Image 1 (spheres, rainbow, N blue to C red):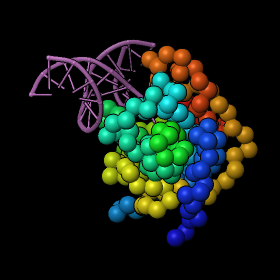
Image 2: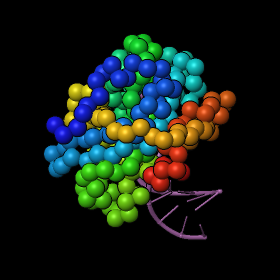
Image 3: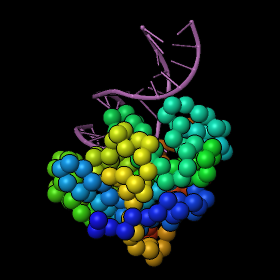
Image 4: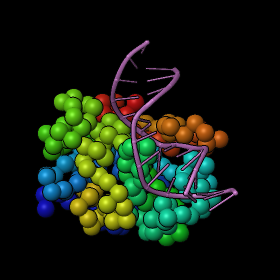
Length: 194
DNA sequence: CGGACGATTCTCT
DNA sequence: GAGAATCGTCCGG
């Protein structure tokens, strides 16, 4: 194992804190055709109970959101249109909050990412939540596993010099929640989605 | 069982 | 900036 996997204790932080602490960490996926990895450069926090933009708003509990009620560090994958999105489950059991991973800076397995994405433009491989899952072959089969004990895991990376924050993206119909500044990214990083 | 609805992306204009 | 692609989940009948 070449990377230092973060232990499950790492995830025992408030959602907004964890969303920022995940920036700079290394997301790694081991699959049959190779290993891909990238630094997390952009995240969004979804605080279910009080957040109209979250699937788990007001403790809404369905088959899909069930995993958010589990312990922190679980993997929540979700199919949106034709794409799969990946989240880190946060907070204690029965507290349905999560952090969406929106963008990565490619580190290894770049040729494989290019092949899966059908482009040679490195900046276009993982600069969006649906793009990075395709580049790394993250699918619904990862749903319910954990980021500290599966073929999809998060390892120690670097500490960003400066973090920016702002409103989240793609949630225009979420009332007052659309203005919450719960999107975080590494300032100046060229792989941020927008 | 049918219909509405996206935490998106790509392709034009 | 607008529109289509396209499909699992969820809810109402």
